[in-house]
Length: 335
Image 1 (tube, helix red, strand yellow):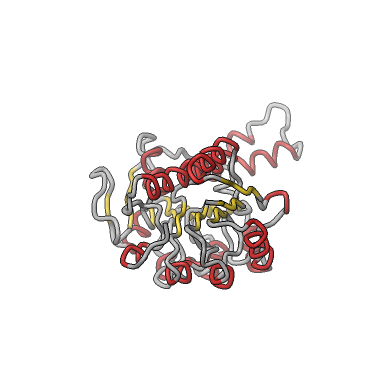
Image 2 (image 1 turned 120 degrees about the vertical axis):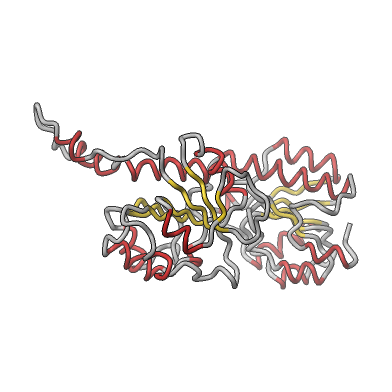
């Protein structure tokens, strides 16, 4: 089998794929400076005569998939295969694998660091110091930038998948009380409280969003929920902007109805004027969609995908969590 890999893949990972499948053609998108578009990816598949594809951000459209019925699998080095026409792959009997939780550690660490940064007024303190405002003998900084500890806070997770549960494990011994809303989680650590979403917003000191974008979740978080938050509450979104009604978020922030927000995702990337109204608020810590951007994330996705491929092809395991299109199990499967 010839595998075209356009995702970042380290040498050891490529060697493992070569040993398992026979041949690798490596054309990472990174030297290109952007993901391969539909036409470019189609050309790469034709040129390489590939029997399978491992991608990251490239445009794996229905057209690309339809033109390549020989594909034995599509591997997607992302937490969700949102750049792949999964329905078309399923129709053609092509299994699609992905790498859930590849960035869980990165996102969890950034959640903790930025929430603490907001709680401790770190950025205003840095700006004050760099502004040469420290006068001899003055205790202005100690008084003006006194903040709060994360310990003792109640953190509410909206969505309690891999990232939410990892954050919970990391902060519960600060100690923090953990509560969550997730109708799909039926078993959990009894130390965590499962609540309705309105109660969660009303009783949490920190509300953190961990939702994918689906028809069910799009615009799910609006003024009805945001206005229930505590006056000193902090809103965190490192997941997807589309699950939050940004006008409602802008409204509670501009009215100072909540303490602040930690945001890594926006309705428009790059941001538009309304996004920047949120970003520029002094009580907002905003980062440019980098919560999952660590060098280690690439190591994680290689390990997760290679393990999944080993399970599927070598061990014949059809019940792996990394299979995105489980509907394929009821039809003829390539490979």
